[in-house]
Image (cartoon, rainbow over the protein chains, first blue to last red):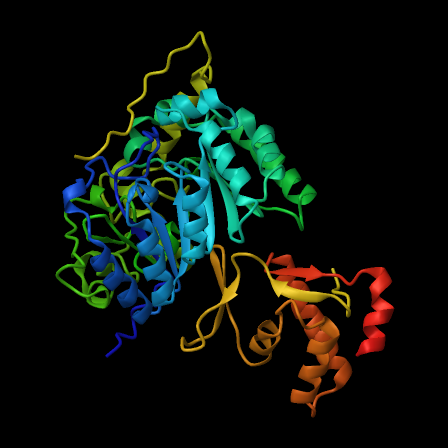
Length: 371
Length: 106
């Protein structure tokens, strides 16, 4: 029996592992990472893919950590594709060689998303705590020889926002047909490093102008999409397309979460795919039901005309900034807590926009690796 | 962009139909899925890199024999153009020198 009040999910975010050769200071993984020993097996993931398709899911986003750190990645691509899913791989490009890429495409990989930490090796090393940039450029070269969709993902923040032109040049010289410029969103590791990452309003405004011009210039060749940092927005983002409406995330250990950051809401309990079917978890689990619909909303959301557009914004941000996961997202200009966000932005405006250079040494909390 | 009648459309890398056993039928693409109903599915199924736009138009005109042929053609050109704007199609254009020979053969 289908519960008619529950929408059909579109995509499954499969966090295959929390292991990663990179240590990015804005990693979206939780601060408490799943150990290797707790990771789901190939067979368990295969079961998840079949249950997802049965539930109506169309796409799987293979992410991590670094999904290529799974020795069984080819089997997982084959299994997801075999179950009927469109397979996206979101990767740093490490560890990969051309032979492994050939096998991934042959296994049915549909879409290769290569992440970049910047346009130059120095910034990429500073942000990821390791050497990555040259390898990414090699991967881009190999991709020319394969029939797979290619997207470049540039994560933008104060330390690399001045490199947008160079990032566009990398994209234009490549076989990518899509580029995402995603400003860091401030949860987990990024929240810990926010002081060094949040751009100033002037930086943000000029970057948006530049990207709009690039969109026009590259129309028909490369699609450019960008995500702005919501601290500067007037209204909140429709986080995850609404809680439990479109997306679900399966963590390496099999726990199913409504979003990447949901663990910051301490009173939520997450069910595990090893104990329950994905359908039961999606339709009935307390974590997914908690912020579905509108009954949980407080004012000003409860009577706001925008509540069906943004669903009250992000629950995790409400938790992080207002201490209450049911509060209106504090980035909303209508939120009684907006002054907390404005205070953070005022502090950013005060700083002399410190950037990576030989003279300055920035303090970072680098993402660690799980046991 | 209006597609040329002699060009051969095919789905771009990373764009494909879901399995015929799955319902509803959708065109899967990066970060997106388009639901296909009736004629839209019949058009996308024919974007195989073999058929020309002209052939696709003529096949759909036979299927929808009750409809105005001109209307069928303009609807198809409009839909192909929309798919192209979303990056879902690649067009192979006939080389100018071989166009006559090809026409003579068919």
